Image (cartoon, rainbow, N blue to C red; front, side):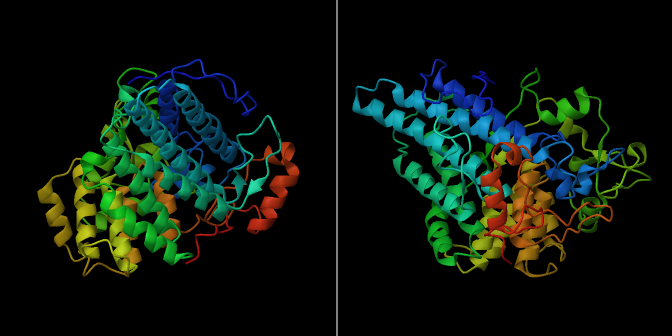
Length: 467
């Protein structure tokens, strides 16, 4: 894995108009790795979505599974990593690529492809901020030389602007030409056709995100994106970690290298998978108790030694992390059919494709997937609940270790029904509160944003989270 460090972006107070001295494609590499590390890490200073979505419970220190966000400045760390380490790097990479001399028409095409690739990562990372907080700095966020107190933009306006940016990027990609990324691209090694599929998969995801509040726009986006989105697991956007630091999987860094026994699977997940006789259990979990996997209680201290543990293979140094995959796309297509959007196929066929792809991706077999899908409790026609529950439960099982994606899906579909633990300090979080240092550094703007969205509380629903 190529990993080139870029400059320290601090509080985004650096001169963003200064010349780029690093290789811009390597700066993009840095943005990719920072993004994936953020999504993959179980470090409770930054990413507690495995706890919020009740995949994992904590052992001796249960505060984060009780939704205590401020003690460790969790919102600030999530916010600053996306703004400083991901978005600022992407923008610097863009500037460097745009400054490269491109005298021939075919070189312009190659350059344009690279710029569009940058934009796709930019859109995904920025949309994650919207989906986490609601109203956020956008138009002023990268103009820190003009204002140190950026205003907060309306969350819907930001998301729709990002959708426009994504459309522009997709419109400029041309798979007949290469990009300048090459091996600096940790997902696809510069393969433009793969980026077209990823970009359209993100468009599919964003379209369905707004389906409850803007069904017409959602239908237009989804019907356009679905035919061009991922068509097999070969299209997955995956970072393959290495066995040598600093390019090892953050789960290994935190749990094995750090010697931490802080997490066990929850009864919520273990019992759900046990009831479905799910073939992924032996991959997800280790350490059976009396012949069965035993989960812990969310929101309380649990004894590590008397419960099951996260699977051993998940803690390998080089365990890969996927940020978007074909199974996710097929769950989205199943949802689209149920919402009456023309994407071809049936909801059941897409659901079956998603579940099969998930089991195969997690190391299971096609025979296991077929047997699993024949169970009345799993089969689309007979499983419990409405379509939101069926898709919601299976996508939740699939998104194990991808807590942020699971949290977004759970808020949209409202399944599985996850209740706040008894000792929780708040209701179930449907957003992060704004970073505390914003109230010191940017008080007027953050207070205006908090008032506008309905209060800076974890229970305040975002504009797209209506049903």
